[in-house]
Length: 248
Image (tube, rainbow, N blue to C red; front, side, top):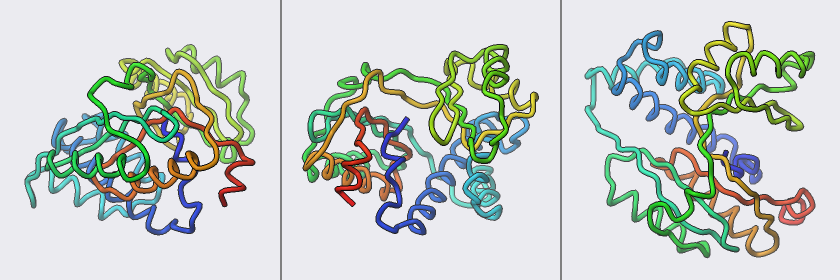
């Protein structure tokens, strides 16, 4: 899971960040509709993308427009899913997931973001071995304040989940990527609701960063977030609360 997500909007860019999310999720909806058809009831990938879009209050018109485009009612664009890998300041591992209609442009943009902020883009596979692919179903603890953790654990195991991670503000139900769809469906049938759900890459170990490296990494994450082709970033760095307060 992309650690930098914890740091978004810290500079008062909430509106721009939301617009960026709309663009990225619109592209994901388009790709899933092209891949599996426009009916979310028969296309789990599309159903999940639409659910995630609704969780951030993406306008219904945006969702419907993306599906119509994918059905041939508008532009006909082919997006390729590509992962770029590299190292950030301090040697932290970074994987960048992109959906692009122009590989040359995207590769150049991603390489530039790495280079300008003290990192370097490497070959395919150079850091992927440091991550495990997992399905992640996130439950907002504030929204479900009365949720019994033991009941959640029992239902998750019965549904086929691998593990549960308890955070200060959320529960994360982890699954094997091939079991993601069945676990999500089973838990939804049991009346559990998720603030987001995705197949993601989780770092095997975290690396603490501070000082100049931390500052450069935050700027790098902002630059990736601002790029429309970048869908997600997976990293293995973490910054302490004290260091975040110092950086402002």
